[in-house]
Length: 437
Image 1 (cartoon, rainbow, N blue to C red):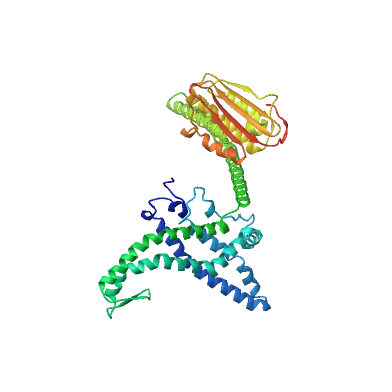
Image 2 (cartoon, rainbow, N blue to C red):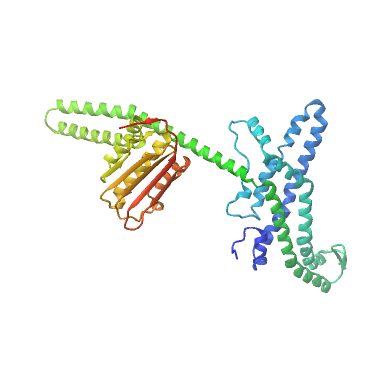
C-alpha cells in the first residue's frame, strides 16, 4: 500500500487515515469552496445583469465579453486549491492548459483565450461553482463535520447559556450536565465515523474539478511544443550573444592587445641594456601570454573555423588540438548544417575530448561523424579506463539539455575497463552541400 497517498480516495484505504492530515485537508478543501464561490456568484450576477441591461446602448457588450473570461482566474484559483487534496507526482491536474500568446498585449491574450476550449470549460466550471457547488460543499461540511463538533461542545454551550438551558441542533433541550456530556460522547463517536464520508466527498469534488479544469492530452502536447519552441528561441538568443561577445573581443580587446604587444616589442628593441630593458621584456612576454589566452578564450566562445569551414574543419581542428591523439573519420566531409546544430555538435566533441584527456587515462581516441540526410550522427570513443558518470560534474548534463532543445539525444556507455563511447544524434536538414576543411 502507498505510504504517501496522493488523493483522499487513496488515503481512505490507509488504516492511519484518521490519524493523518487528510480528513482536515478534505474539510479545508470543501469549506474553502465558499471563499471562492461567493465572489464568483457576485461577479457572474453583476456582469450578466449589467451587460444585459446596457447592451441596447452597446456599453454592455464589453461586459458580456468579459463574462466569457471569468472562468480563467477562477480556474487558476481552483487549481491551486486542488493541491490540498491532489498530490499526483506529475502535477498535471494543477497545470494550466492555456498557451502563451505569440504577441504582447491584452487584445492578443483575449483573442487566444476565446479560441481555446479550456476557456469555455473553465467558464462552465465557474458558473457551476458559483450557482451550485459551493452551496453543496458548505452543506456537506456543516453536516459531516459541523454536526459532531456541535455535539461535542454541548457542555460548553450549557456553561455559557444565560438561562441554564441549551437546545442542541434545535432538537434536544438540555438543562443539566449529565445529558450534556452524554451528547458530547455521542459526538465523539460520530466524528471519526463521519470523517471518512467527508474524505470520500472531497475526493469526488476534486475529481469533478480535475475533469473540468485539468489540461487535456492535446493541450499538454501543445504546451510541450510551446516550451520546446521557447527553449529553442533561448538557445538561438544565447548563440547570438556568444557571437556578439566573440566579435567584440576579436575586434576590440584583441586588437588593442596586439597593438600593445607591438608597442612593447618596439620599445624593447629601442631600450638600452639594463633594468628598463629587462622590465620591458617581461611586460612584452606577459602581454604575449595574455594575447594567447584571449585568443583561446575567443576560440572557446565561438571558433572562427566553425564559421569559415563548417563542422568538418572544426572537428578536424579540435582533434588536432586534443591532449590525447585522436583519429577522425568524417567520411567525405559533412554538409553545412544549421548554426545551432553545428555549435552543439562541436562543443559536444570538445567536452568529450576534454573529459578523455582529464579523466579517462586513454592512450587514443576516435571521432566519427556522418550525416544520414535526416540526422547528424557523431560518436567519440576512447580506450580509457571507463566508468564515466555524466552526473558527476563532467559538464555533459548541460550539453544534453542543449541538444534536447534541438530534438537530439546524447548517450554515454562507459563500462568499467572501457571503452567509453559518447553518441550524439541531432535531426537536422542540410543547409549547403559538403564542405571540406
